[in-house]
Length: 253
Ligand SMILES: Nc1ncnc2c1ncn2[C@@H]1O[C@H](COP(=O)(O)OP(=O)(O)OP(=O)(O)O)[C@@H](O)[C@H]1O
Ligand SMILES: [Mg+2]
Image (cartoon, rainbow, N blue to C red; front, side, top):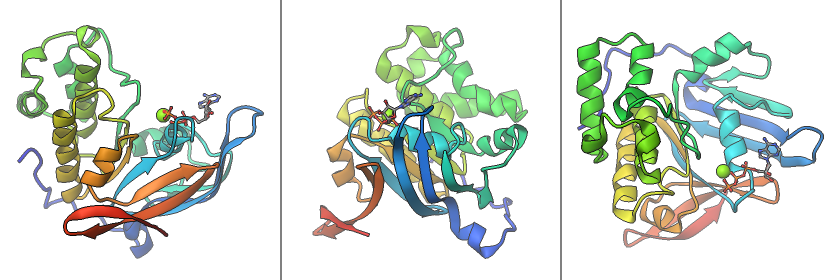
């Protein structure tokens, strides 16, 4: 068991905030003066939910995730994260909210000169965690993602799949309230992809809300979670239909 529940963490919030952790209302996004790449996006993701995010290359998955991660502002509409309208939230408050979100970037964004260990330790050290506890947690997680032999290696020397696993470990080490992962299994073989998915599922069982962008049909059928699907600048939500323990398709919500 890599993650333990935190019994002491009690959140006092209004009922609506408790229910919805990521909300979008008539959201549009454009870059510069270009046309909108996403239009009229509406969603209300519940706290503790697990969604895949799909759509062909260029459909806007990374753009949608970057709005959820608060690094990209919507061009119009309302975005609510942790029950808070983030449209007019100042930079410092956004940075604090972001600490509760773990993110796996499509291009990893590791600190190249630092070791695998130090990259993963970063979120814990930022919170001022005792160094002995940092060592224990980081070592255990890097072992689990099968990188124990690379712990001391600088990130720049790792393979694509190894970098991806370091990025994942860094995103989950702090048991974030939201985990956003952009193609987190795109560079690893299918055995490791399944193992990483199990890590996300375990984290989700402990309460983390998870959104995973993927092109992998195999993951989508092996793990029957609802799917946010981007197409023609819009969003559809599909819920899987399960028969005989296998996913048979989906219904559009
Ligand atoms: N910084 C940017 N400036 C201008 N256009 C951008 C920028 N980022 C993304 N775009 C455009 O927005 C559209 C959606 O891009 P996005 O990266 O969100 O797609 P994606 O679904 O993540 O694609 P992929 O599956 O290839 O990662 C694309 O047409 C892209 O060219
Ligand atoms: Mg992308």
